[in-house]
Length: 217
Image (cartoon, rainbow, N blue to C red; front, top):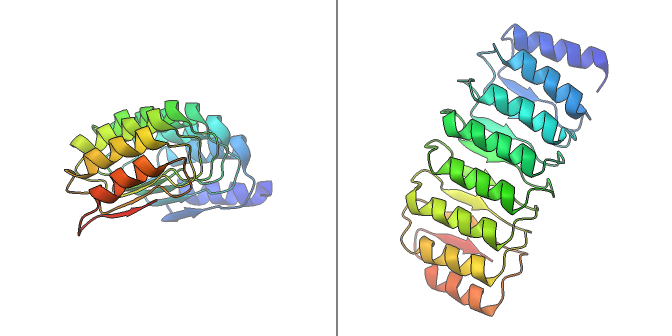
């Protein structure tokens, strides 16, 4: 993204002139994300934050997370393919503990969020009451992360869709999720394709299926 375009966008944000911040595929990097975060601090018009494929990294995610702790208008955060790892996920998790407007969070295809990041997000979702859709596709989440997310589903009553495609979840994580899904009455769709789930895990997931719950593995 050229400097002029970024400056124009920042001015629109400061002037509350836009409702959707869509800058996908602009290579804004960490510096661009930090500049946008600064502009968003006093913004009251943006409801959708779509910054996919921009390589904002952990520092960019941290800057946005600080804004989301106080922002009262953004309801969608779309940060796919941004090279965000556990540190960025932890920062966003802290924001989710206090944010009361975000309903959809997409951190898919970052390839670096592992169990530590998933566990942090899980802890946040135990107290968050607004997130309905969480996408963590194509990261590095294993059984420990899956177990933490299963614990969330014991107490969370707002998440309806959870995407964990293409991670490193095995039978242990799948079986723990399956047990919780038997009693959870909120989630309607969970995706677990392309993980490391064997026959035992698949059998447990199959037994957890019910009329109002779609489980893909």
